[in-house]
Amino acid sequence: DAKTTQPPSMDCAEGRAANLPCNHSTISGNEYVYWYRQIHSQGPQYIIHGLKNNETNEMASLIITEDRKSSTLILPHATLRDTAVYYCIVIAGNQFYFGTGTSLTVIP
Amino acid sequence: DAGVTQSPTHLIKTRGQQVTLRCSPISGHKSVSWYQQVLGQGPQFIFQYYEKEERGRGNFPDRFSARQFPNYSSELNVNALLLGDSALYLCASMPQAWDEQYFGPGTRLTVT
Image 1 (cartoon, each protein chain N blue to C red):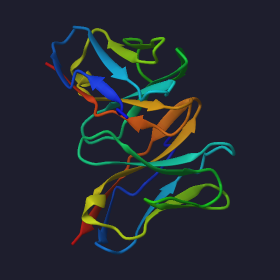
Image 2 (cartoon, each protein chain N blue to C red):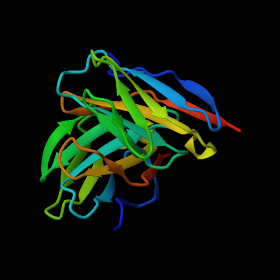
Image 3 (cartoon, helix red, strand yellow):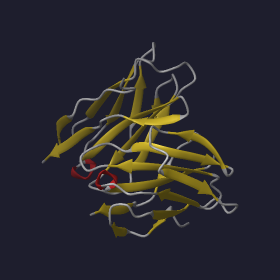
């Protein structure tokens, strides 16, 4: 059974906010949610992570629902360089689970 | 600071052969994890090592093995290669176990 579920693809206009959802309904109380992105076939790049509170850094914001069953990654002002596959990851049973990822295309 | 390095960059092997992939973590990082990424799919977790001990294992056959050395570098070994083992193999290092991961560029393995 999938540990995380993400939409396969999304488009976003350049300069607008990109909101990428992830469902992780089986997450345990002490498990963090991590977000990474991967451009072409490069190694994935860390974006942000959180446990239960909303988090913000220089790249993005992470909103986690109160029941922790889902989260949303927000890129506040998407640029063309944000075009990538975005992965939502949880740790369960001493394994890292990458979801199927969302392919985000930022349109000029 | 140097990032995570992996060698070789590309590798071509024949079915039935054995391969060893290498990873050097970021200085000061004590944990390494390995992933297999088949074209068009997300990375699949293979192993995680922390302080030279295996801390996590994904759903891969026993043909896959790994180890971590005292300097925290790591090797991934795959025996009896199959065509389906063709993939990008990614290594990530972490300061501690189950932490924020920093990925290397990967090793592209092609099995013919």
